[in-house]
Image (cartoon, rainbow, N blue to C red; front, side, top):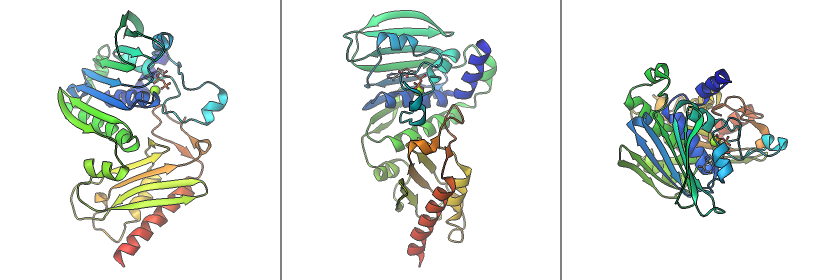
Length: 319
Ligand code: ADP
Ligand code: MG
């Protein structure tokens, strides 16, 4: 049992940023409209989220950190129609396995919330607390029992970069939420609800031109923005989403970048923010526990659609 836990924890939780990603996804699944994030030491000592979502019942809270407990999948069919971020029930279990986990939560049925402290996978403390509806989760001292894994963490600067990158993926896809992000008590981001275009401008591309992309075909919708080719030396930002989830897809990335070929000396400076919406039945997220890789039924078709669209846009621009 312990070995299985360890393997799973290693796959889902590689570094503080993986914790942040999982906690953010849970807050979004709980329909939060406001999420406050508190990070200390690049997440090495504290990653805390406070949300105003649905909260948990006492029982759900007590079970939430057990493996394969998810409140999101109720029937076998649900597996094929996933529209929540989580569904494997592995994240909190993996986090509890490698850190000190504190959960405080209250749903709308309960007058009083519950506070639970989990260490080494077991409940160490359980007390009622006064709080508003929502959930506060604190993850302390990641890998404190695993010195070998602590050593493999990168410098604070690099771990912080990973943290910010996970944050970026979420704030691009989920823009109807208010976010406050603190690092070592200093506020780094205070983000209000906004459109995709404004979000890209406020964070990534301050005053360069963006080209909109919009394709609708065979029940597939592709939308987003690409940056104008430019002569800056900074590496571009590359974000690709399938049904609101950021993915890595080398094939698509290459096709997008190659659409610019011949127009630009340094195509590494190109930025893109592309959202693909496709029937969940055509997407398989169950390839890797972190869901960063995905199997798309119509990958080739989608690649070609995007490439054609980008070429059209650039062609109009440079005729
Ligand atoms: P999954 O997201 O795959 O269901 P997790 O391990 O991430 O599994 O979470 C386990 C369960 O804990 C969730 O199914 C949910 O019921 C509950 N949960 C976790 N975080 C929150 C939150 N912020 N608000 C409400 N419920 C939560
Ligand atoms: Mg989850």
